[in-house]
Amino acid sequence: MKREAPPVLTLQPSLVWDKPGLVAGVDEAGRGPLAGPVVAAAVILNDFHPIKGLDDSKKLTARKREKLFDEIMAKALCVSVAEASVEEIDRLNILQATMLAMQRAVLGLRLPPVKVLIDGNRVPVLPMLAEAIVGGDALVQSISAASILAKVTRDRWCESIDRDYPDFGFAQHKGYGTAQHITALRLHGATPLHRRSFAPVRAYALPV
Image (tube, rainbow, N blue to C red; front, side, top):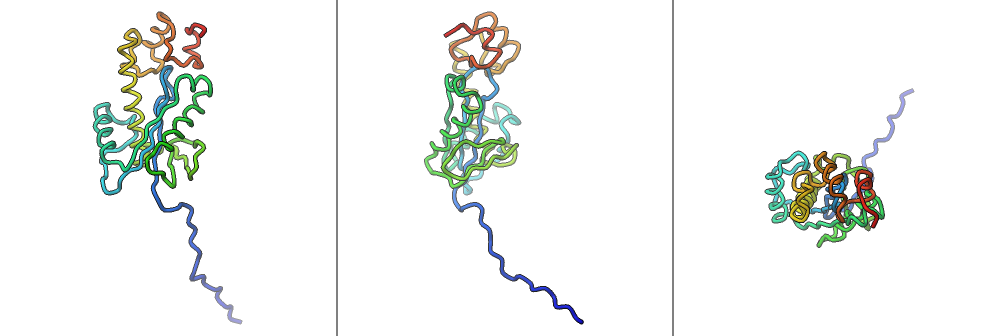
């Protein structure tokens, strides 16, 4: 007896996971340093004005980051840069402060995105769809752009406070716990810009 062939499904419902609309990339700079705010940026790129050379900010030279910073600011559909302060880092912890800075950056966008792509493995509380992408700063152009804005903004902050605290060398180490920075902490104590919840700072911080 001849078997009948199974029916062929000619129509299948399409599953739409993402709504059409603007997509923002988000990244941060300054989770690891011993001093200063953590900075986050959100970027919605303009497809009609592509930017060449976008990449993870850590893979770019300072000169290239500065050049791309200006180009992103000129060509992106909209950008937003926000931060969480040293006080918030010490009160909340660095992870929660980073989420807060990211949330502020997204909510500060002039045009609200329908979806947000975030570098890393965690997402802040947001009123729209959000997806974490590990290594996203090297994979997604809008996240790359956000990483550059956040990094350049924080580096400029470090260079500006270097004038106020010349003994610490912020312009060189950007707040990270280098030997130079630890030596300065030991000799001069912690400044009001240092994160007292971080162990290397706590050892040299006077009570406030």
